[in-house]
Structure formats: structure tokens, C-alpha cells
Image (cartoon, rainbow, N blue to C red; front, side, top):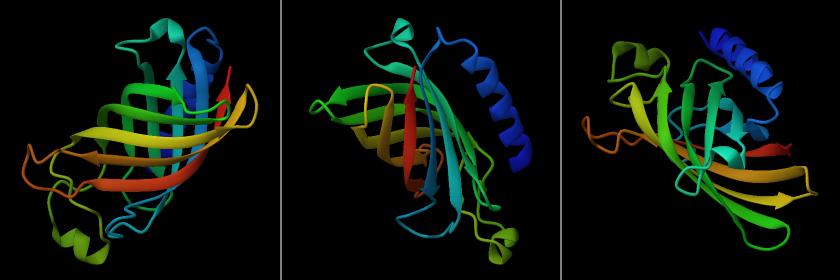
Length: 172
């Protein structure tokens, strides 16, 4: 399942890369999964495509992306809006809000005893992230990212899934 998701995302990315008019940035990173509870002990690859200023909506840049687990833990595909704030000439922060679709558990099940996956309550979740980064130059940046997916207790209580990592940003 994860290999299929990865293949689909890389295919979409290569199609979109050819459309430089659409892209503002492409990002790739590594995330530690479930940092606050450590229920899921995996590592995820983060891929994100940030659309250009031409597509800004409510002041935010549309994005699509994925957190792809390298193990058998939860992977997610997401989209939403990202707001970028320059704090200094080289330091920036970003906030993003949107939705996510995941392949994780919905409820606690007997399978979890053998291989722990966090129950997330529903397939569609809210997603928010916060990034703090450093611009290396006009094209390259490195950022720390904290992302969280949760149903916001709409479909029963859940703790959500919080990932922390680092990623490389390439600006067109």
C-alpha cells in the first residue's frame, strides 16, 4: 500500500514539476511519527507541493502533500492552505490548515496488539502544521516542521497524530 501511494505521489510530482507556472516550491523531508505519545514509532517521508502566488486564496498558498510512513504505520495525503511570514531577511515561519486522508486505524482493534497504530476515528481528518525555517538563499531553505492530524473530537475522542521533522524547500 505504501509503495503504491509513493509511486502515485512521485508520478503526480513529476507531472506538476513540468508545470512550473503552477509551482512556487517543492519540499521533501523526514518526520518522526507520533512524537507526543510515541504510540507509532515510525519515520515518515514528507513530500509537499506549494502552488504559486497566482493561486493564492484568503492570503494562503494552496498545497498538496503526503507523509509516507517508511514502516507499517500511518501514512496520509493532505491538502490545504499555507500562510508564509518572513520574520527577518532569512528566518520565516509558516502555518498551514487543511484536511487529510489516511490509511491508519479508525478504532482500536486486535491487530493493534501485534502492531500498534494510533486509532484516529475517521478516514478524513483536519490537518494543521507549523514550520520555522531559514532561507539559505533565494532558492533553497531548510525548515523544522510540526504537523498534526486529528478529527477534532467530531467523530469521538482521539489524540490525533503529531509528527516532527526537518525538510528541504526548493523554490522555483
